[in-house]
Image 1 (cartoon, one colour):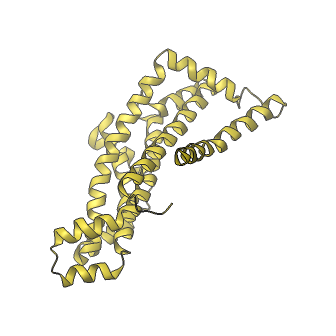
Image 2: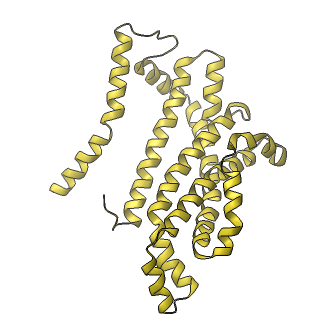
Length: 255
């Protein structure tokens, strides 16, 4: 019972900072600091949020964005994890991929959108490809870092016992790199939303990015903030989901 209360308390503390920010924000505007025409109060944003939710507009935009995020995230994540672990296991693989990653990682991924639009068109395919590329790099770097920093004694024991590459991969590399893989996934999901929302500003007529950009063009600032808040809420939800998965997959990790 006490354990359940502790978990509930911890979860409650998790929401203190965002709630506190909203209270300060509302209080400052009610006290006369700021212009509500350009910086709407949280109550104004909630009213717009409820309005576009009831009309179904928000659902359509969120559904389009989530589909692109999910598809691109999985397409980018799976090869990134495999390549990252193979880079740690096999030196030729590391020599081949390391300069490519070092060269391509710093390129702003949104800069690739015109090229991807030419290759895949202006539909979902180009945006999914952009998300996949954006997610790939932080996940592969974190996976390699986690696998490469596994204590040497585990590699030596596996070698002395004649463990096959599959055993080394499944019993040592995979489990040893899981903490850093989840760190990469957290960064990857954030990058996925960043690059996708930027792409939706100009390359689509449906999505949270389009909602924000179109609201700004129409000077519907409260609705624009409703879209921004939606992204923040989705980020919070994904963070909680990844945290739960991490606890499930790595029960031995200290907290």
